[in-house]
Length: 64
Image (cartoon, rainbow, N blue to C red; front, side):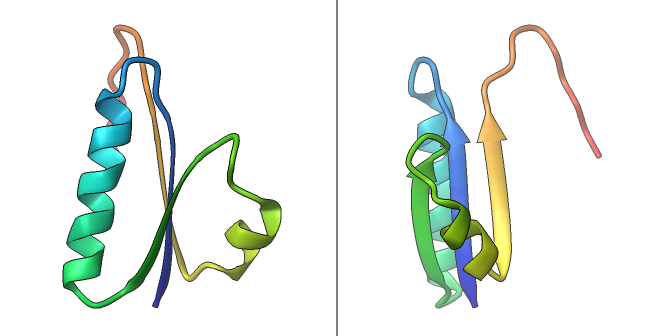
């Protein structure tokens, strides 16, 4: 499975979380790419089977 993890990070915490998500997916033998939102291309997004998106928040918590 092709997995794409994209993130936006101000101080590095979200980047580290994105790398942790990617490592967990790699342990499950998935093909994983990690990119900042600025680096990710629309082609990468379209070609992925599973997409994780992470971003920083300031005082706001959202859970689904």
